[in-house]
Each structure stands twice: as structure tokens, then as C-alpha cells.
Image (tube, rainbow over all chains, first blue to last red; front, side, top):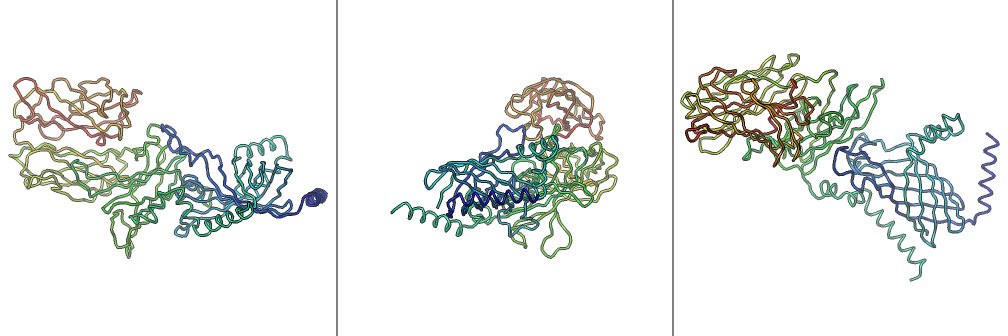
Length: 198
Length: 411
């Protein structure tokens, strides 16, 4: 354990030393693919576009390789209903911290963070628990001067404990590895992000 | 303006918009209906909290809530009009003992001023009645209740405007029965055809088909031509229940011949409410001798209730006084099922099940043609000489609203 912590610390220090130290603010928008639950599986028409493609807003800050981000996804009433029991639209806020690396025009990042939910006109509702577990996010993209595009994948977990247990599975038996991989692949939410850098 | 200034201004502009607009305003941009309903509409709103303890055999159900308007009486004979229906996937919860219960908060916006009742039910997503957006015989239902301001007892009567303002917060608790679905049909005895020359008080007795059920309460309304010739409610009341429930209607006050309509709504001991509408006919010239005639049957609105689409073929059978007289198949055209009976013989002096000289025409429908009869209804055939014309074998037209069909427990 000590050894792995030491290696990680040295790796981070090395990356910090090798990366130009400058701060950067990001603002962006995103579209996340979702697989909504059809309200009537016999219906002629499926869910609407807003249920398949979830729009979102992005704010990020990086310093050297360190990175913090806030992504707010606009969720349709059906999904908010699944989370909270209230059939209203809302925001799913993904607040994360991690690292971001740039190799020329290529940018990549990975974060871990908490989830927070906001239901439309939440102040008039009782019984909404805004805490909604944890998330892991990773992305890869290209920058073109002051703007860029990237693809990201987000995994939501009901708790940090669940998140840790899933990733510990990769170090376990083949069955545990498979279970961890299934969890990741089944729950991965891909998104396309357009980002402005300041 | 250089690029640096452009980016800075853009950054500040986005931050200002985000700060000033607030989260709700952004959501209203994506979902304008919510903005209009909450912010600009100022209409009447109802939120119903529904809690369900599901049964072991209930697979991934939805929760449905229906707002039914009670105070509209238009040209149709129905006293209630479905204003809005919503079905949602419920939120899954577990109690301290690990038992599953489902909850949903279903909201309705911009409801017009009026009188309503609100029905919550568990919408099955498997089986014959999956996703049909209506409380069926095998789906538990209950009237939602709320507490008017200052009241300690809840009521299932919803009204706008009311003293509490334009928002009603209601609740409904359901528990799914296990095992076979209860038969919520009821039998009703009492005359449905009367002669205007001999009008009298008719006693109606209602009894549950399922003897495990009792009647909690019964409401009735008789609709028909009023003294000024318009259509309206001419008698009404409610009675307490028991193993049976009975009520009486004094027809001697009626001066108009013609068609009447009797609404009977029964609330059973398990909370289920069952409605049945029956055609009542007051004849001034009932056929007094045996007559031969054909009945031309038109069943309308078959998509809404029977879930039978245009162009579909269905099986049907019909009978008189529970004796089968014919069957066949036909195709739905113009949202209607239409067929003619074979030659019928009307005998006004015969005593049948309702102690009146009345033939009961019963109809069963197999909508999915799986060999089991899905729905049935029956209607009294009181033949007036005015129904017939000419001297040959004449035709009487009979209209059946699909909403008066019930699930057949004898497939």
C-alpha cells in the first residue's frame, strides 16, 4: 500500500514538473446519450429526442495537471422521477476532481466526484434527498485554440463505497473482474462535449 | 476587439446569464410546459402522492392517476368525463424489513374550475391490460383523498376554486391483492322498462358478484328529459352498503316518455369503485303483442375502452336472456362494431329476469381472438310500436357505448 501511494505521488510530481503550470477555465455544453425507459413498449412512437440526448453545461478549472469540474445535466421528468419520485425536470450535477493532461492538441482527463440532484422548484417539495452517490468520468478530445471537442464516459454509482468496490473487482478473481467490467460497460454514459478555454 | 477580449466578454456573459436566470429558468427553457403551468398559467394544480405495496406477481408496474370531472353533463349520457390521465414509472423504496413499496408524485396542472374525483391505480405492464392507461379489473385502484383547510377528515371530493387556493395536495395508498383478481362486477335487479301509463316506484337491489366483497357505499343518479324538455338529473341519492345495497326511484314524477339513463357507482369493501350505466326506457306505446323484429347493434368508441383498433377483426356472440342466439366475426370500421341479430320475437307478457316483459340482449366480445371472451354487456330490449315501421319484420337500432362493457369472468 505504501509503495503504491509512493509511486502515485512520484508520478503526480513528475507530471506536475513536466507540465507548464498555468491555470485555465473551461465553459462548455454537452450532449449525453441516454437509454430512456419506454413509457409504453407497444407504442408506435418511442421516447422524444430530449430523453435520448440529455443536454448539459460544463464548468472546469485546471491548474497544472490538477482539474476540477462541474457538469450540470438537464434531466427529463421521467429520469428525475426514477431518482426522486417526482415527475419534474431537474439537474444532475456531477462535481468532480482529478487530473487533466495536454499533449499538444490532445487533451485527456479523469475525475472522481459526487452527484447532486436538483428537482424543478425543489423548494416547494418535501422529501427530496439531493445527495445521489458518486461518479467517475474520463474523456479524450482535441483542442483548436480557444475551443475543443471531446468524448467522455461517465459512470454513476449509488455511493463511493460501491464505486470503490467496483474498481477493486478488477484486482479480484476472473468472475469479479467480469462483474466489474459488466458494471462499467452497462452503466457507461457516453457524451459529446464542446468546450471553450479561457 | 481582439480574441482575448471576446473570450472574456463571452465568459462574463455566460456567467451573468447563469447567475441571473437561476436553475428553474433554465429548466423552463428546456421544458416550457412546466414554466407555463407553474409560472405563467396560475391555474389549478393537483399533486397526488401514491404509495403502493405491490404483490409478488406484479412485474415492474407503473402507477396511473386519472382526474375525472364530475360536473359536466353535455349531450352524452355520461356524467363523468376523464379530464387527464398520467402513468409514470414509480420510485422503488424498501422499508426497514426489506419490503418493497412503490411511490410516485403525480402532478396535474391548469385544471379548469369544476368538481372532480381522482383515481389512482397500479398499471400493469404485462398481460392483456398492459399499458392501456385505464384501471382494469385486475389492477387495484383507489380514490385519492385530501384534507381541505381546517378539516380533520379527508375527502375524495376535489373542487376548484376552493378555500385552500388553487393547489391541492392529495394522497392515495394501494395494496395489491394476492391470488386471483376479485370480480368487481355487480348484479342489479329492478325494472329497466316502464310504461308511462303505469309508472310506479321501482326498487333496485345491487349485490356483488364476488361474495367475498361487500358494498361500502352506493351512489345513483337518474338522467333524463326534465319537465322543460332539456336533459338533466331527475333523481339521485346515495345509500350505505352491506352484503347488498338497495335504493328506490319513484318514476311517477316523470311525465316524459323516452330514454333515461341510470348511473350506479358502487364502492366495494376493498376500496374499488365500479360504475355501471343502464339505459332506462319509459314507453308510451309499448308493443303489447308479440312482434317480430331485428336489432341492429352499434358498439361505438371501441378503441378507447376495448382497445380494438380500426381494421381489426374480432369475434362476437349475442344472446337473449342468457341464451346464445348467434355469433360471428367482423371488422372494426369507424371505431365501431356493427352487426344485426337474427329475427327476434318480442313478447311483452313474458316474465324474464327483471320481472318485466323485457328481453335482455347480451353481447360478448373476444377482442384478441384467443378463444376467450374478454368483455360483455347487456341491454334491455323494450320494444315500442314507435320503434317499428311498416307491417313486415322491422328493425330496432341499439347503440352500446364501449365503456359499458365489463371484463368477462366467464370466458
